[in-house]
Image (cartoon, rainbow, N blue to C red; front, side, top):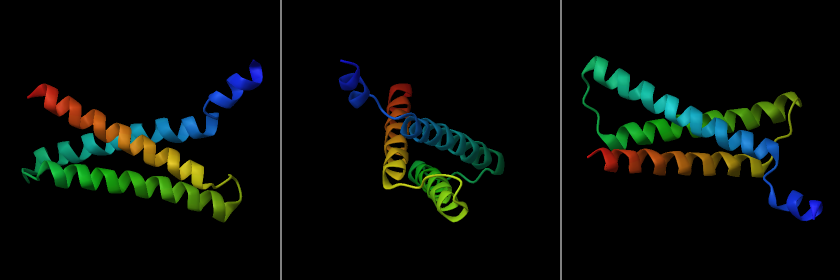
Amino acid sequence: MKELLNKMLIPQDKANHFVWTVLILTSVLASVIVIDYWLEMELSFFFIMGLSFMLSAVAGLLKEIRDYATGKGTPSFMDTLANLYGLLVAFVLVVLSILAYR
């Protein structure tokens, strides 16, 4: 039973990638919205989300490149995939919260 449970659980490293990516995306999104408001730029929602999405994706890729270059971590495609899932979940949550607010 324990073996089956271990197969079903997400490895800690992948869960960390997922959670940190969600946090980074929401932090970057909040920062871009505040800067947009502060500078009175009136950027579109799609531009703000696209910029936040790209910056967060670049952060995840840079982490994997750092792992590869320094040898201090274990770069893997599955880590990048966990980052992508985190980006998609955060994006859906943001869109749903905006739709619910309207």
